[in-house]
Length: 304
Image 1 (cartoon, helix red, strand yellow):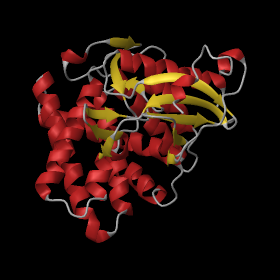
Image 2 (cartoon, helix red, strand yellow):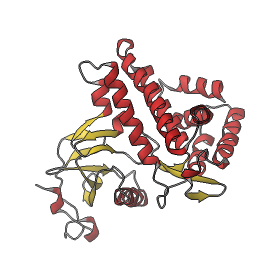
Image 3 (cartoon, one colour):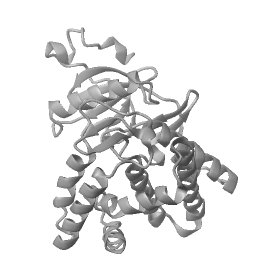
Image 4 (cartoon, one colour):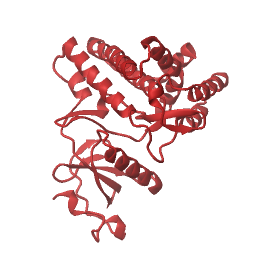
């Protein structure tokens, strides 16, 4: 049955305080299920408060209405498992599917995928403002402070660098837009990795916006680099070659595209990406992946 039957005007919908029958299909990812024809539902259990779900829904609708490449969000439903948000099912394969799960991939194919990935990331960064999205310092500072595994002297240095980097003007005047305190920001995805970009018939579509914020686009690039390099560390050695090439090509393409758009020298953009690295490594620790913790701590110490 089509999930669109259960809309906010339905007497069984959450708006009426009722309960939509459980029509969950097969699981597609964590907390994501098939939902009728051409739709999926993301289920938020009792651990997610209603204000968080309100925020997710309002931000996603704003992104879609702004023309960003995101799935359409149709409705909210109440399920036995919790609250569900019903999205368009975007047909296609992720970059990860193409790069990691294909029988064989050539260097040219890896580089072509990296360019698509970089173009999509820069497209996200063209969005200047989204209401109710937190700015980077306000989002990141508590996350760094909570990481007691980082020595106190390094935590203080990280917080100082976060504040300094956030107050520096962007290298390109073309990024002027939303202003918070002394710095300007654009939309950052916050979790932009190969599994969150689907190559569909209508072009690349970005998913999973839970970590979006307003900040420096090169901070978001530094975050993506750390995410991808962490994946390289977990890959079997014979399979890591295409992924390493993808990471290097992504950075090269993004810096080139960024430089062309804002007239910024590549070395300056790379220097700023490097300056963000210890901060995003500290943020990555909050994901609590034991296999990556020693590497992240070493990277913080090495680059701070």
